[in-house]
Amino acid sequence: MEVRKAFANTLQSLMEKNPKIVMLDADLAKAGGTFSLRKVFPDRAIDCGIAECNMVSIAAGLSAYGYIPFVSTFAPFVARRAFDQIAVSVAYGGQNVKIIGTDPGISAQLNGGTHMSFEDVAAMRAIQNMVVFEPVDAIQMAQAVEQIVNYNGPVYVRMYRKDTPDVFTAPDYKFDLFKADKIKDGKDISIFVSGLSTVDVIAAGEELAKEGIDAEIINIHTVKPIDKEAVIASAKKTGRVLTVENHNKFGGLYSAVSEVLSEELPTPMQYVAIEDKIGVVGKLGELKEYYGLTVKDIVAKAKKLFK
Image (cartoon, rainbow, N blue to C red; front, top):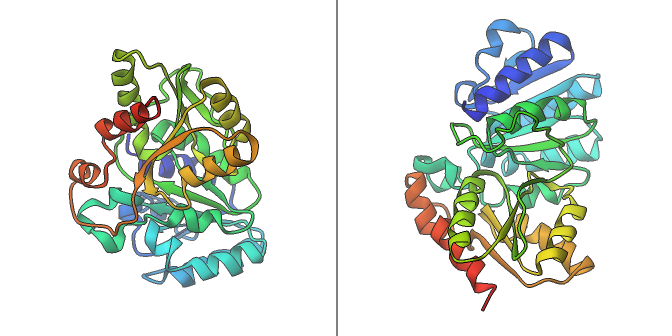
C-alpha cells in the first residue's frame, strides 16, 4: 500500500471517533492522499490554498481552541517556507500541530531541486519540543498515526508518499514512536537508517554477510527525540557505526547519532547521506546513483570501517 493511503485511511478512522481532529491541505490533497477525507468530513478537511504559512497559522489557532490539526504539503513548502510560523505560532506558542511533509529528499524526483528537501530534518530538529518522525512503510505509518494523535505536542512527519516495499511484516510488530526498531541483529557493525533508505540497507546487509560481515540494522524512525539507549547499546556491541539517510549529511540522522556517541561512547563512524549538493531532476534510481545512496555505496562505506 502507498504510505499516503495508509496515513489517510488511518486518520479517517480516527476522525470518525474524535471530532477534534482536523485535516488542512495547501492545494495538494490529491498528491498527499487526503482528498477523500473531504467527502467524509466536509467541515474538517479543508483546503487552505497555495498558502502554506497561512495554513500553519490556521492550524495553530485551531490547536489553541482544543482541536488536533494536521497540515500537509510537500516537505520543502512546509519545512522551508513556513518555518517561521512553525517556530513561533506552533512551537513557541505551545500548540499541538501535526505537520506532514511529503516527498522528502530525492523522492521528489522529476519535480526537481526546488521541491527537494535535503535540510528539513535539520530545520525541524532545531525547533524546540518538535518530534521528527519518518516512516519506512505503510505498516509503520498506519500504526504511527494514532500515537501521533495521542501525543500532546508538535510532530513533523517526513512522509514518502507512494509505494515502498513492506519491511515490518511480522504479525506481532508493535510500533513505538519513541523506540527504534531493530530489523536485524549483528555483531560487526551497527547500521542506523531512516526512511526510504531502509530497504537498501537491508539489501546491503545481505551483501555484507556474503563477505563475512555481520551487520546489525536498526531503523531510527524518530530522529528527535532519538532512542539514545538503542544507539549506545548497539554501538557498544559492534564498535563501528554507519548511518544511512535520504537527507543532507548536516543536521540529520548522521548528526543525531554523532551527537549521542560523541557524548556517551565515541565510536568510529561513517555515513551515507547527501553531500552538500543542490537537488537535480531525475528518477529515483538515477538520483540514488548521483548522490551516492545506492546499495553499493552503503556496502563500500561499511567496509571502509574495517580498514
